[in-house]
Image (cartoon, one colour):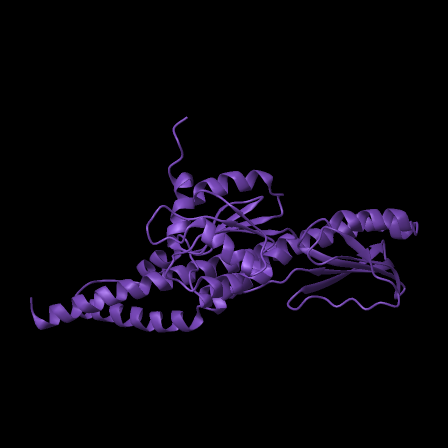
Length: 330
């Protein structure tokens, strides 16, 4: 092999490693963009429905009917607050209580502080040409998640390597067009990194096994908790050579319930030891024999708005993931 060929091969190997990271982050970026578009369409639909639904209530000044309509919309975790005004006077203002399914009335002497990043919208309610009032709706944020923000530096470096690799391959006679690159990036998934296996309740897998990754995961779980309006259950199994207490401490503020477990391998910290570390950090914990069983026993008792996250190690994630990939024969 010539020195040029060897150099090209080394660049390809480095590029493959870098591109794996780029693919994962760009996959997240695409999902975030699609989520933002979906929320935008949902906002327009909700406002159109409110325009129709509130017309009669405002025309007749029917306060009980008005409250009933607003409370039905506030069951949606993506709707945080609705305020109705008639001639600039507040008729009613209802808002979700953060972290619960409850709805509270905001009094005239109270100030409603919308969460950072939330998205307010307003429309006028009309009958023919007469303005009956105005409705103001605060929607949950159109967000670029913590998972993406935490990856920006890594992505930039990886993209530079990718550009260098594609350039080297082209110089070596390998034809790689823009369409091929775009299609390859668009089709990639990153198993075990904020991977969603099911919804209602949401099952999320993430192999966070160090304090930095755990902090990013905790920030993402906090966003999901606000968005879904349910609780967070974490199925946690970790290797004995990892900073167990630090990882637990990073996740602790956002977790409502812990399930300690251990994948079947010598490096794994026994589930009893994991539970002891969680209890020492102030968490409420039970023990499950293995990750797959923990998932199977936990999902049926959760509400549709809850989230179950399997984390602590890629070995734990792999054990929990296996039944979904290879279900038992019927």
